Image 1 (cartoon, rainbow, N blue to C red):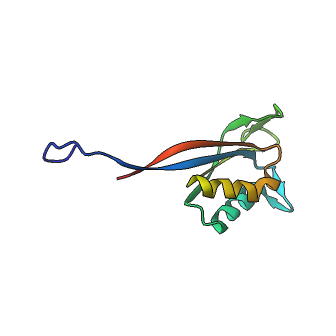
Image 2: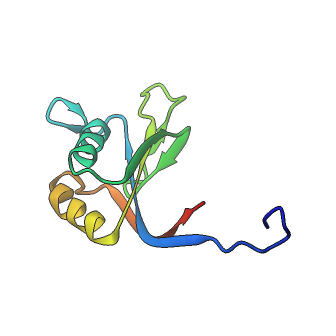
Length: 113
């Protein structure tokens, strides 16, 4: 609502959210897989990407990844947002890295304020 009491409509645009769930022990060559994926997302000039470290999680293997465990295999979530065609292109380009990694896509609306 504006100062004059008028109801203001939100402007949105369609996009997709790509979520990749992995652990700090997941590697690509001699480096962290999540770092490599973030670098690829930046190189692809995707609209936005954020990596989050989580407290605990598990995936398809059923193995617990926990920040507090002796193995220190913290779960990492990467969230990437862009237009659907750019997310699809990134997935095709990064498919070699995402074998056995939980990956989801969701249709979203980006709110422009």
